[in-house]
Length: 161
Image (cartoon, rainbow, N blue to C red; front, top):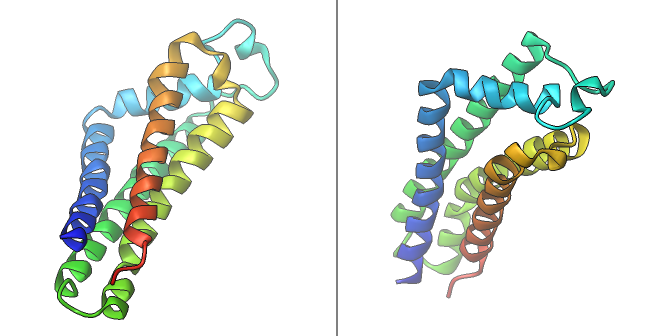
C-alpha cells in the first residue's frame, strides 16, 4: 500500500507541474507580468529606484521561459518516475528504490525552481519580501509548494521493505 501511495504522490507532483505549465502558457501575460513585477521591484515604495531593478524584456522572457521549462522537466521526470515505480511496485526493495530515481529528480527540479527562482532571486535579490502585494500571493505559495514537494520527496525516498 505504501508503494502505491508513493506513486500517487509523485503523480500529484507531476500534475502540479502540468497544471502550472498550462496556467503559465494560457495566461502568458500574467506569467510575464509576475516576473516583471518582481524584477522591476515596482510593487513596493522605493523599489523601482533601486539599482537592481530592471524591466529588461529579454530578462523577463528568459525567466518566464525558465519557469515553464523547469516545470515541464519536473512534470516529465515525475511521470517517468511514476511509470517506473508502477512497473517495479511488486519487485524487491532494491528494484523499487532504483525505480524512484526519475521521480526524485523531478521533485528536485521543482524544489530548485521554487527555491532558487522565487526565494533566492525574487525574494532575496529583488527584495520581493518588501511587497505587500506579492509576498503572500507569490512567496508564500512558492514556499508551500517547495515544502510540500520536499516532504513528498522525503517520503518517497524512504527505504521500502
